[in-house]
Every structure is written in C-alpha cells, then in structure tokens.
Image (cartoon, rainbow, N blue to C red; front, top):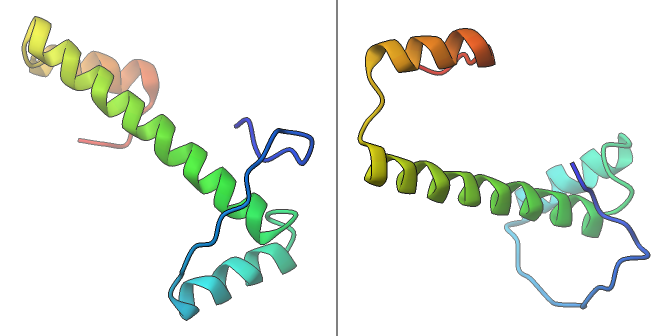
Length: 85
C-alpha cells in the first residue's frame, strides 16, 4: 500500500461522516493503525480506487475474452490462494 505521506502534495477538503464511523476511525488512530484521521481516510480512498481499477480491468477482460471457465477459476484460486468462490 502506498499510504498517506504528509510530504505528498495534498488538498484540504471538508467531508461529513456519520458519528459512529468517525468514532471508529479515531479509535483506529488511537490504536496506531494510522497516524491521523486524514491518513486513515486517504488510505481507505486509495484502496477503493485500486479496487475500482481492478473491477474495470476484470470487466474489460471479460468483455474481450468472455467469462472464465470453471477450470480457469480453479486454477486462479489455486495459484492466487483466493478464498473467494
């Protein structure tokens, strides 16, 4: 994970979060899972962007080559160690 680096060029924004979620994020910061709320949010957004990029890649591959066969899926599960079905 690239992670949040305070030396990165950054822009300050305001966001609204549900209070229970903010409390969980602050708890994670207190436990040392992130250096700050901003770092936690930044890392979460980076993860979402990566997931979205992978989803687009998979969609495009399926559009070009068709759905993977059961054999293809079994191979990928074995090689990647995926727990997904």
